[in-house]
Length: 371
Image (cartoon, rainbow, N blue to C red; front, top):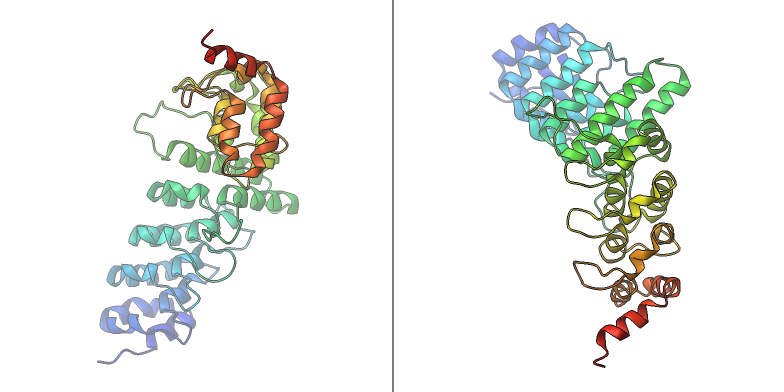
């Protein structure tokens, strides 16, 4: 029997009560798509006012064809993309919408990581859920399947410098809600959701086997790129944690120095300055392999003197200029000179490090002088 558009028309006309029977009697209708490549499930998931009837219709389809959750139309959008794309007036009490999304996720877990392909930004359903300030249950369900979604940038294309991530999108969405007055508890909900995303990013999981285990949220915000106002808030709320090592013996400054990328040095400078203003002694603390923050900043993450916070890090503990990196055996200015072989951008950094401690050359000479 050839496939028919009947099921699609029932979905478009919102005759939800007729869909379960049609799916049972004519399952081949599930294969019918419109000219845009959308199935009946795509149409159902675009409905904004979800009710019990729609949920029953979706359940009938998922029972027969759960794989359709990951079917993309010609715009590369799946039913799950549409389901999470709610306007920024998403109500936390909208239990039916949340139930719809959770059904889709359970039916096809792989769909949470499926990206759109068109436009400058490519998005997973998780990106869209964060933009829409989705329910905490939805975010947790997605992160349980793939914790790395918390920090995935919008685009993986090397030709673009896209550094915005879901953490930033979620915070921006809740700021908009709070300022618009749609939800008085928006910021409280935002803090819970942000902590969930940071736990996924920092710990690689949102579910701990040991219920007593916790994580330091200050270390987490230092390890990933966050909105500046959110970082400042966490630092203010957890200022005492700057001085406390975690179970690996690492402090917030260690995480901040390790997390630098080529396109985030201005942000890193902001973070390092804030941390050093509170606890400058952290610049003298070695990490779990015996390296000082300055060693890591120069030889591993390639911070620069004039952009990235290297100057502030150096001035906070000038003795580090005369301390060899246990990994390379090089003092900081030589480590920078090594990096300068690959990029001239580091030449000025090498010069500034040497100028800050010119006596280090005498130390090197005395170490090599046979007399």
